[in-house]
Length: 323
Image (cartoon, rainbow, N blue to C red; front, top):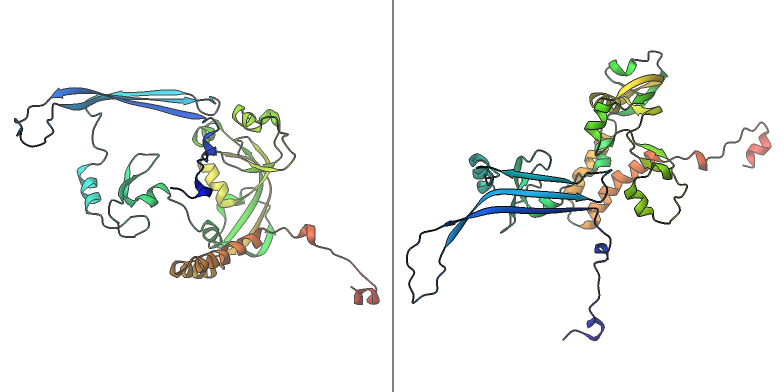
């Protein structure tokens, strides 16, 4: 019997109370093909196969409550290859022979090996353990960014508006410019727009889904980071990020200012040391310590101390002594 303080069953799945924005209905259709089998021994228990199901088609309906984000769609497929194997013979042999997870490198435990695939292309990527397959994560992102080449010295304004197109080796730059979000770029990035912008939201800019979440609550006046897919004016961006934007179809319509600087990976040695020590850690405390050594440094690089600085220009020696 349960203990007195534990003898009451309560509902705890509160996250199921809200209506889901998307629902997927799936169905397979199959033909029952009669099977011939030998007469079983009546003196022993047995299972007699009667027919075999051969899949001939499948359908899937994705229902969306918010068509402005994703329209409801129906998918259907039928044909001789409707039940073709997900892996080819080479991939299946590779999977069967694998003894280590291709993501974390650890040996498989019993009944722990699964087929991991790319969710965009559908292609098989390798044999993985279940935890890595469901919880694949990009680790040490702060450390990764800080180990790249960073500004060091020799800052100067550049007069050439096209300087970002041919940055000399050993130098980098920041550009203040206007960006045109072309239709080509919108199609490629509709699920995850480029050019994040910190601004205050306006109620008329919210989607029906966002308005539903907001309910009767006030919108508030805090600045938030938005991905809007809109053109940007006087946007400040690093030249490497700008090159990626241009590759995806975005256009630079005007350059206001460009500041260049010498750059080097001066912080990489420190970051790599902390990362290496974290992999050698044998306790959660040690892991968190070495992780914090990188993350706290990253926080200091973003810290804005202007609001906490007090600068005084003094000409009186006695007044200087009293500060």
